[in-house]
Image 1 (tube, rainbow, N blue to C red):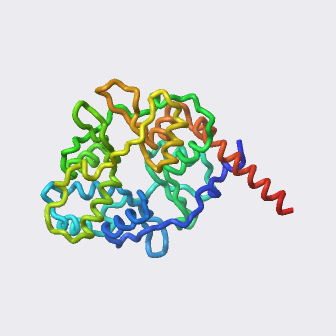
Image 2 (image 1 turned 60 degrees about the vertical axis):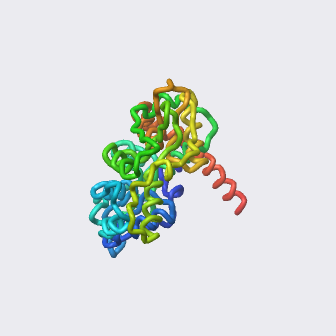
Image 3 (image 1 turned 30 degrees about the vertical axis):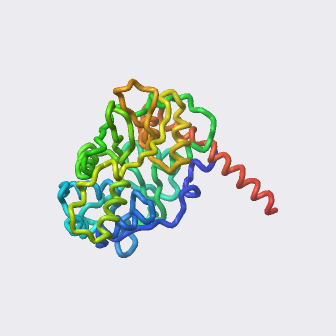
Length: 305
């Protein structure tokens, strides 16, 4: 096993955008939309980690007051509250020197989408996301000999294309899902609506300054119509590669009975695969990129002599 697996800080060290507890949820939502982030560390004035804010937290907050007839002005007011009101406090964290195995264990056990990297003094130095791990898994072309059908989510909550966005927000919040397949006549998949789609619409709608009814907009007007699919018999390595290539967190699964609907998500690739095959299997599935990085480091070291 490469030495790098015992210290993953080399892979995830980067400047992390964050907010303070007193920042408004609306401003945090704008930042997430502009930077295409799903998570923001929430810090004290001294830079200590106090919580983490996710797009799903904002969806949950919207669901508390949202109706199809809720106006843009009412949505704006509901989001002009401090981040500390809705953030997840005392987030699960890792230290810069923690190994890949420890990181995977925490993602799997706590079922989170992001983990801040925190120094021993409590200062945030970076963040690791499910997408980072999935991208690492998808680097190699060597199959893992695990079919998508083994880890896919088959009990999927769907939404009608004509349903108002308010209904989609309710479904996302109550069922704890980040994406909803949009199913048309004959159980046909015509699109996917994600919580980031809802976030983008919310920020744009509030920014327009409209006072009219806002969340009666149909799901079909905000969904992503070009759905990326994968066959149920494809290797999970292919799923990881597709997610990394297209920058998506889930794929629709084909090759099923007409009335069935299934997805394979980033969480499935990490949490479900870890539960079924073990943490060591996941670590070894990411070994290719780690070995490649070690090899390049040796080349650079030799060239510098």
